[in-house]
Length: 107
Image (tube, rainbow, N blue to C red; front, side, top):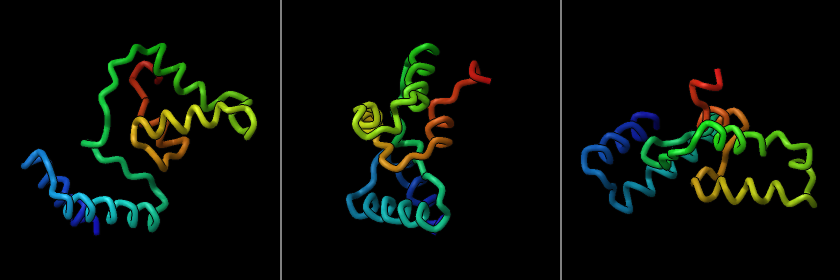
C-alpha cells in the first residue's frame, strides 16, 4: 500500500497532475493507511503555501488552546473546523496541526 502511495505521488510530481482514477486510488489508499496506522497523512502537493508572519501562525495555533474551544456552544470549534476545511485537512490531530504550522522560530 505504501509503495502504491509513493508511486502515485511520484507520478503526480512527474506529470504535475493525476487522472481522476489515479487520484481516487491515492485518496483511498491514503485513507486506508490512516485507518491502519492511526497517523494523519498529508501529501506535499495538498499543502497550501502560507506566506504568513510568525505572529499570525502563533495566533492560529493559539485557537486550539483556548478554554472555550472544547465547549460545543462557543462556536470557536466551528471556526477552527472551517479553517481546516479551507486548508483541506479534514482529519487532523493536535500533533499534525502543530507539525503542519511549526516553524523554526517556535523551537
